[in-house]
Every structure is written in structure tokens, then in C-alpha cells.
Amino acid sequence: MRIVLVLSLLLAIAPAEASGPGPAPVIEVPVQETCREHILEEPKMTVDDWPRRALGRPVSAYVVVTYDLDGSGSARNATVSDSHPNTTFDRTTLSLLERTSFAQGVVAQGCINVRTYGAVRRAEG
Image (cartoon, rainbow, N blue to C red; front, top):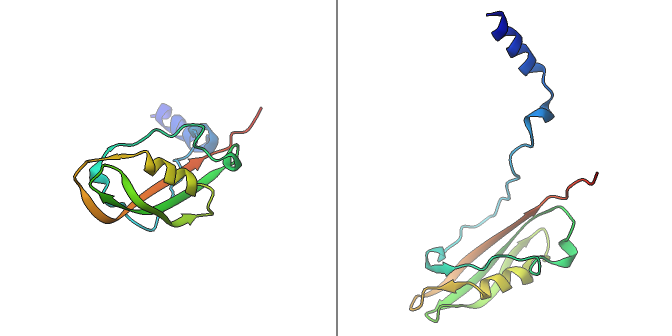
């Protein structure tokens, strides 16, 4: 009984940082994606895709793109309809969507693609 009580007390007074980092930040986006079921292959994001002005900085962003599918297997008429907090990732998002493969023969208009970006600057030391 004493061991349980002592262990409980030790756990109660342990510093919060000992439990490790908290949960990953959540990026809230105001819309739902559509036409995702027609994606066959999405490109992997590379270092070359990451905007230079975002390198080494903390990032919490999203970009919403509307596009059409004309049956060719590629997105058409892609335009950025919303981005937050600024336009830093707009070009990257359009490039990634352009390299995405969709099922051929699928025709759809007003599809919505949502990309989220998150990065945490690590402390040096």
C-alpha cells in the first residue's frame, strides 16, 4: 500500500516536461476535400517543393484549391480559393496537384483539394 502511495505522489509531482512533447498541433481547415476517391497517386513532397521563405521557420498553414477533372487523369483549371496565413504555399500546392494522377475517365467539376503544411523549428544546442 505504501509503495502505491509513494509512486502516486512521485508521479503527481513529476515535471510536465518529463512526459515528452504534447500532441501535434492541429491545423483547422474550413472546408472538406472532394474527389479524393479518384486519386491514384500523389507525389511525395521533396525539399525542392518547400518554399525558400518557409525554410527554418515554424509553419502552420493550409491551401485550398478548386479544380476540375476532364477524364484525362489530370487536374484542370486549378485555382487557389483560400490560403492561410498567407500565399507562401500556393505555388507548391498547385505544383503538387499538377503532379497528382487521377483515374482516367472521371469527369467532375468543382473538386476541392486541401493541403496542410506544418513544421516546427528545432532549438539548436
